[in-house]
Amino acid sequence: MGYKRVLVKFSGEALAGENGHGIDTKILKFIAGEIKTLVDAGIEVGIVIGGGNIIRGVTAAADGIIRRTSGDYMGMLATVINAIAMQEACEHEGMLVRVQSAIKMEQIAEAFIVRRATRHLERGRVVIFAAGTGNPFFTTDTAATLRAIEIGAEVIIKATKVDGVYDKDPKKFADAIKLPSLGYEQALQDHIKVMDDTSIALAKENKLPIIVCDMFTPGNLLEIIQGNFDRCSIVK
Ligand code: UDP
Image (cartoon, rainbow, N blue to C red; front, side):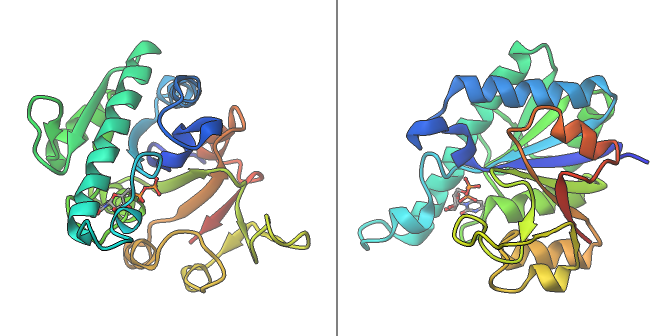
């Protein structure tokens, strides 16, 4: 078995590299290389990237000077910056790429139009969905789940710094146990942080499997998409 159309979600923080901020082009190049292996294997790929390496709404609004809604719009703009950077990296690797933004910015990206996105995918173009859902108070995990469902992706892959879902935080607890497979209800439990509740609820309602994997292991994404689930966790 294997998947034909997937949506991969990367956090903004992942792009930042060691200094925790901004965009590390070496990481961009690595990610683009991983995406290329999928495209070369004939898989249709949608991408969502967060904005946490630049700004998050909650943090921007923490001292009350910037309103939360404005902070969230700033966060959505951050995801556009990341999307454009990723588009460049993917084109540098020889892929055809389109950025579609949930907030209209016609000089730099197409508007999100699901039929158009699907057409791009059918033609082998990678589509990067930017500006989240276009609404404050949501996250890019929710945006990624929403887009995955809209484009009819068979799975959403959350590419992170950990290799799966654990019963407790593996960075804090040495005896944390990896869960190879879990249900949506289990993923909604407070101590298991797969994605935020809104995105898990959306995935559950639409029976969209969520895969959590380590993005820095070369070849991991392709292996998973081809049906080898040894190095990830799956929520279904
Ligand atoms: N955001 C939003 N609506 C959305 C998606 C994102 O308001 O639909 C804002 C929100 O402020 C969020 C920021 O954009 O903090 C960056 O996204 P996120 O925190 O999900 O990025 P990540 O943690 O994946 O880097």
